[in-house]
Amino acid sequence: MKLEKLSTTGALFVALSLAACGGQEAEAPPLGTAQQMMAQEMQPTAEVFWESVGSASELIDGEPVFREWEPETDAEWNDVHAAAVRLGELGEILMTPAYAEGRGDDWMAYSQGLVDAAAQAQEAALAKDPEAVFETGGTIYSVCSACHRMYPPEVLPEGVTVDDVAQPRPNEDLSLEEYVEEADAD
Image (cartoon, rainbow, N blue to C red; front, side):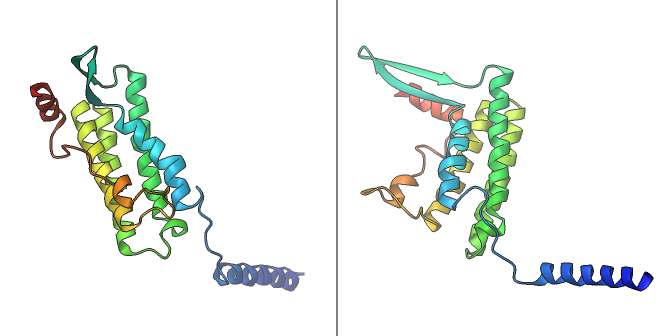
C-alpha cells in the first residue's frame, strides 16, 4: 500500500514537472492585440486623465471667451485617480510576455516609463493638484508618443501617418499656470 501511494505521488510529481517544463505555449494577450488594448483600454483611460484639467479659448458671438476646468468634487478627483491607477496597471500588462515578447528592450523601457508616470499622476490626483495633473498628463503623453514612434500602430486609417497620431501637444514645456498666462495674453 505504501509503495502504491509513493508510486502515485511520484508519477504525479513527474507529470507536473514535465507539464511545467514542457512545451510552453505563448501567453495569450489578455486585452486583445496591442492595438486593440490601446484603442479599447489605454486611449479612453488616458483621455479621462488628460481631459480632467485644461483650458480653452474660443469665439462666442465674435468675442473671445477663455475657460478653464478641473475636477471640483471628490468623486471627480476619484475618477482622475482611478484613471491614473488604471494607466499604471496597463503599463504593467504591457511588460508581460503576452505583449513584450518579440519586442526590444525599449518596449520594456516605455512600458516602465508609463508605470512611473502613472505613479506621479496618482500622487497628483490624490493631492488634488490641477497643475501637477496637467504636467503629469504631458509626461504620459510624451511616453505614449515616443513608444508610438518606435512601435507604430499596425493599421492606420488611409491617409493618416504615424506623425498624425503622435504629435507632441502644443506648449508641452509650459506649466498650466504659464499656459494660462500665455493664453490670457493672446
